[in-house]
Image 1 (cartoon, rainbow, N blue to C red):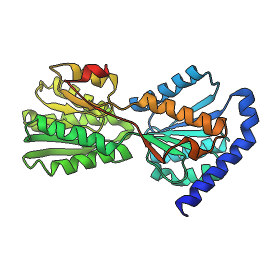
Image 2 (cartoon, rainbow, N blue to C red; image 1 turned 180 degrees about the vertical axis):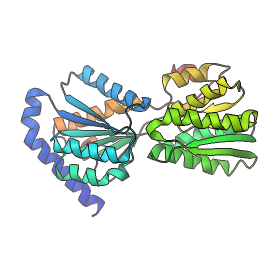
Image 3 (cartoon, helix red, strand yellow; image 1 turned 45 degrees about the horizontal axis):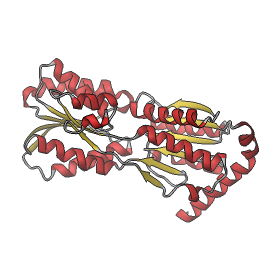
Image 4 (cartoon, rainbow, N blue to C red; image 1 turned 60 degrees about the vertical axis):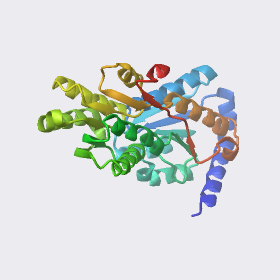
Length: 318
């Protein structure tokens, strides 16, 4: 099936949905929305949700929003998508997933005329849009920064997470960057278990500290929470000179970067709240007001800015 065919089909289904529900939606302003979390425990997903809910409050929309937590499981994500479709919701939001594993469920939503809007989940044919940040660019900013801060040489612990498209891309970029830093030695590499990411990072880092101790010069983490987990372990072990980076720019991480004696030297500030508000606005225009998708959304993937945060500029992000 061609891209043009799928987009036409998506538009037709969305138009049919609007035609069948518009009068009720306009009369009650009560769209029925299903939100499928990849892992509701992740702070990034909570911040997107907070931005969406703030947008609802500011705009006065009385929408019925149900939340489904997939707890880091791709199978549960697909099942939750199918459950939302079977309930006949007006639209589905999916956050921080890997939509390639849910393509069959998305096709079910498409056939049922239920538009799917994704946040930081990668674009696959059949969804309306994926709003995200450029994961390659974020890693290209923070990865050389970390290696430069250790003088281009030393011993690195490399945490990755391949099950999410964004963290996978970040790790892939770091792997390429490392090829240009021949004097940096990767002591250990670990793929984080997303179903218990903080606990898994903590136990793995405890093992690395026991094995490598003061030989560790730097830690690369694919997002802020695992970065903080490694810092907690190293502090407990009396290691205080290791340089650590994360990505996401959560308030706690920015505050940690701003501490001059902290091992956290950088993160990248993602506008998660803005992503949530943007999805709400798109749903209102396309589902609530019946506007054509292509007149509202400029591209299949919409990238938002995500600047590098260091000890030099962190106060600007507090």
